[in-house]
Amino acid sequence: MKLTPQTLVSFLAAVFIVGAIVLSQEGELEDGPSPTDSVAYSLADSVATLAVQPTARATRVVAARPTVPFAFTATASSTATPKPTATGTPTPTPTRTPTPWPTGTVHPPATVGKALVVEQELQVLRVYENGVEIRTLPASTGRAPYYTPAYAGRVRYYVGTFYSFGTWADDAWYIFMGEGEIMIHSLPYVKSGEEKVYEGQEHLGVRPSSHGCIRIHPDDARWLTAWNPAGAPILITPPIVDKEW
Image 1 (cartoon, rainbow, N blue to C red):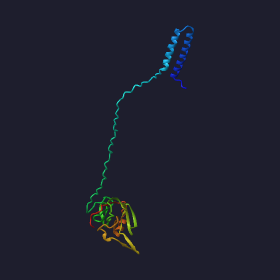
Image 2 (image 1 turned 60 degrees about the vertical axis):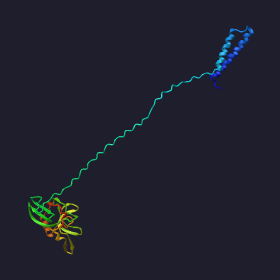
Image 3 (image 1 turned 180 degrees about the vertical axis):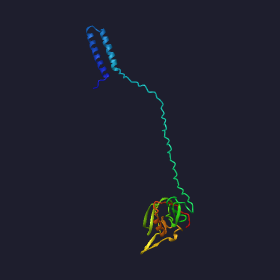
């Protein structure tokens, strides 16, 4: 059984009432009512009154918090403005403008020693010694689309006889590498027993007909080899692509 405050007060009241009754009876037997009786009855009544009255529980008063109006304002998140990406301006590729070449007589690339000039407009190979033209050899350069590129440099080395595009050629001199090996050599030929059958002799000095090399007559090719152009400066003028040969 749980002992509550009300239960304790009721128990004490009952004890005081019983005690007051006992005292009262004793007083009546001896001398009659006494002042003690009044006190006992008053005390008993007070205890009884306490027993009857419910015990008031202390109520905790919680002060109400002041209401503060609160409005949530959505703040727009700051969005970083993307910086424009710096785009480099492409540098235009410089276009190499071909140097215009004069027609007719072309001065040699060197005035001292040996030198060669291939004039594609006239289809000739000019041979110089110390600035003096000593031979003019009919030639045939590269036809479309195998144009002989313009070039300024030196004759490299002697090749001799070689085989290409189903034909042979003699007395070849290597000059430089273009779409293929650019050389000066004799007219191409095919073999018929011990005989050499040359091709394109009618094109010499007239029109381009090769695959990029400079063709000359077999007799001129043998003479050029005997003259020995190794290391000599050579100048090849640009091809004539818009001419009806």
